[in-house]
Image (cartoon, rainbow over all chains, first blue to last red; front, side, top):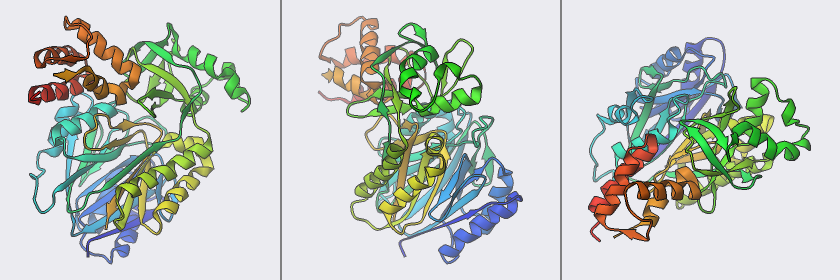
Length: 396
Length: 74
């Protein structure tokens, strides 16, 4: 039997009924067999507890992880204001779930709590991996992925995403079995006979020269080369964005500025490629708030990504993952795709999902739009990404 | 001996090339050492101790580096 992977997509007004419908659709696709892991991503429109309760009832209380999202998709549907569910049944993969709270104050403590009941390594299931979901507004993406590495150990690869809330930026939640929590992590620990495969790619390139961060604290970038950060952003983009009809000196309200920042992000040169960090909003002193920690002394570039590059990078992420799967048949895919990409692509976001499907073929797929993506291969020390596509493949 | 490149490479994915060099070089100086190609285990651990005084992921990565320095048999 190996591994079966089924997905279901639903929307409506009644949170319980929508969760139930999504889960039932997924169950049909695995012939209603006993579920080993369910995943659910839900729009902030819904009562998360009701959605989770419904999915758990339909799956017979199967282990569950999930989170709130900013857009949901499967191989059949792409949308917002929805619930998407996947169910997995497997002979070759064993799944264990755990939740940890207090992410903001103590990321290592939260991860230890999530991992406390996970088993030791099994000879029969030697490959170790994790699917990690975190509170997307805790501002602890990089720290959380490192904490997972510290607690799980160096032989575990993992991927995942930061929960979102439809761009409201009020509260995000993660789900673990019956539990729905904020300021928390939800982790599925996977032991398997065949390794899972991860692909990561963003579609940004630099449009500014190298710039030095001269003042920053936590997730706030105050000054670049001694000047207020947003002034520097505008100075370097003023002429570049004129052709698109954007006048940077006329950006007034938070929504306009936020949308502008999501299209022109920060890049850190890491070798041959850049790590992207997403700016979210500005403050009265023209400092810029980011989705994760910004370090004083870093040298950065302002980045841009045209739509075509965003679609191409989604395709590339799937190709990288498929290559890493080394010819194994794929049961299903889980995609963690940044909401920033959704904003850049607008109605063309579906083209990105289609590009992934084009690479993977007739493979069930579940995904959500995140406030950050997580991907950490064995041996790496950095796992948090922004405006990036992360594709996780589960072998059949 | 532990090459300084190992320190740089540990932070390059989170801080970028230039940022990781600045962080590590500053930590080396704060540890009372000179920036050089490689360090004895005791020296490397001093650098890790400086980095561990920082917050968040810089501190966490320093912890990993200290563990590797202790385990390094060279």
